[in-house]
Image (cartoon, rainbow, N blue to C red):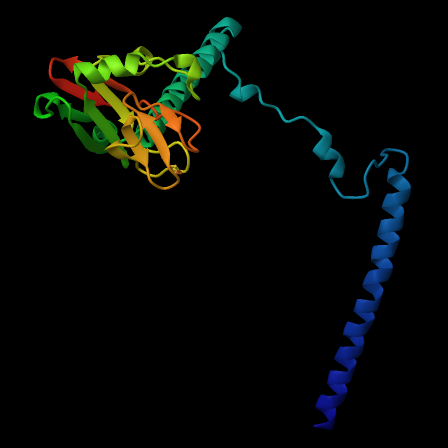
Length: 235
Ligand code: FES
């Protein structure tokens, strides 16, 4: 056992000596190479092979073998094609957006109201609902039309002739909302035979013009038309 231990010690010593000798040889080699290469190279970077990063790679094998004009044509074609595709996509997007934003058919239908005028006798009022608001339709008599026209316009608070407020003298179409604070006036009432707003006492005449009370303006005239005889379309 003692013999084996001694043999181990001898072996370890040998290895230790060899390990110690190696750095000495490496240092000697390094010193020699530094000395021999000092005149051959200059280093621009501290990293090994760092100067190779400044070299431009050789792309010649990727270059087209066609002429320059042919390559340009291809480039123009690609750019033009992409531009056309992009424009078509943008147009489609805008169209879809506008389609979504525009009113649907049922909303458009509510925007207009059609009225059969044959159902309204002369001298009578009818109230219809349009866009959530009342619309007064009055089938005026000859005497009411004459009365509306004989008023001195200069004396009115909101000067307006009867002709300016109707498309056909026998049909008066107005928004039934008092111009004072928005109440709905009562028909065939008031001091002027037209409409009376009981909220604060505004009197409108047979043309819907303000004649007395706090309301500042005549009753508003909405958009309307007579597309055919006996038919009224409001809106
Ligand atoms: S709201 Fe009609 S008079 Fe005031």
